[in-house]
Length: 144
Length: 427
Image (cartoon, rainbow over all chains, first blue to last red; front, side):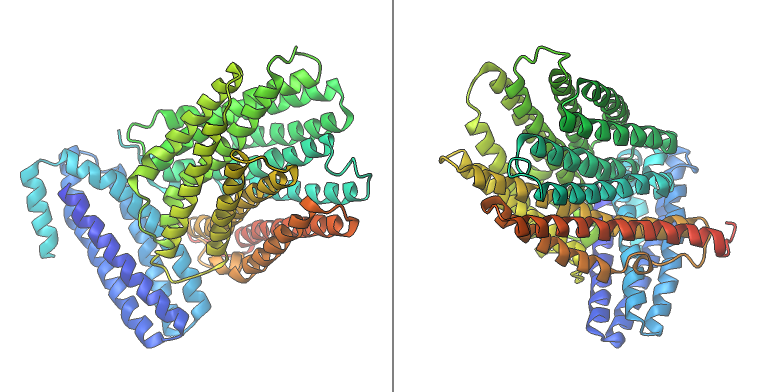
């Protein structure tokens, strides 16, 4: 389960940073909020990059399926990217209510996305990708 | 095998499927308030009598709870259990109509004690609910890799089918169409499967995913998420068999109560350990719900150990109802704003209202205060027979549901307004 374990830890890390940013907004500390939000956006986008450029192509090659789960995951990544842009705008305007409202949508969207990845997609990657290719994929993702 | 459909909110049913059930649930709540106010002014026997109890219980259990829970299931099965319900709009419409007409017939049947209405309520409720649940049950059973939530939903739906079966038998007995053997035992089993099985297990199985999803909490301990729903379901089956065999069920009731207390305590601890700092009304609804479940189950526990007064038993019912309603409200105030935003955004409406614009958290907070007030006002009703207390409690219940109904209708209105007047970008 090396894929699941590594990717799950990344999800948890992003959750932590997201929570820090949200707390800073609630406290009205927009300087800290901006710093933590940028960290969240960077980490999340980097995680997506690892999936879209390394993990998903490997999965698609092994299973021969490009129209299935990975297509849906890519679509959801686009939705998250859209929300990141809007949240950045809310932080810039120091609009607490707009930020918290967007954060609510972001959290539900991200959590259901993460759950599906952890419970299904990563588990399938761990099960279906041969061990040596899996280790190479993991190394490539770590290097990104 | 991996089902793409189960992977995405893309596969979530249209918002009308969910809203029709939620709006109906809130409307039945308003109807309950009206009925309670009317009964308050009637004779002492009317308020708290057998007919009154049947009507109140079934408006709550079927009109309110079943509506909200079927709506939630239509929405959540695709998202958290990976199940796709084909043609959901049509199926939801059929189930919804049969449920509403069936409940109304049932209320008339209880009120008039008419065998005609008993028969028709059995027909409508039976066909509506026994159409909906097997459709869902079949899909959930076909899942290969069960999560704790999907497994819990399986047992909750199984409990619902059993509760419906017993309920239909009782309706036909009351209408004079059946001899009514084991009526008292079946009645007890019916309530157990409906309350602990259907309501309790569905809430628990949904909580295994949504508490973590909405509030970013640590995972439930595996022993709870894996075995809680299975154990409760098995104990309910055992209880039914014991009832039929004429064997005492106190031990089973005590174990069931302890299990629910453990589940509620662990859920409260998850919420305490949540990573998200927000403490909106939905967090408070969850806390209150779990607190009430602990109180209700402690009363049930004590009732099985010491001789209990009828009034304290009534209090345990009120706390259980409070628990179920609190969790329903917690879910509705998250799900509805999210769905309005999500569906409109996906349809390409760039000006889709954000979650706070659909139902602002302040409105949910106001409802939370009303809900607490309503629950507190019902405590003295259990002990005192004073007109003004009954009227105030009934009025607060009516206002609480009317508040929710208004905001659900308003959310639907905002959804339609955006579709009608805002610019849409084709993806």
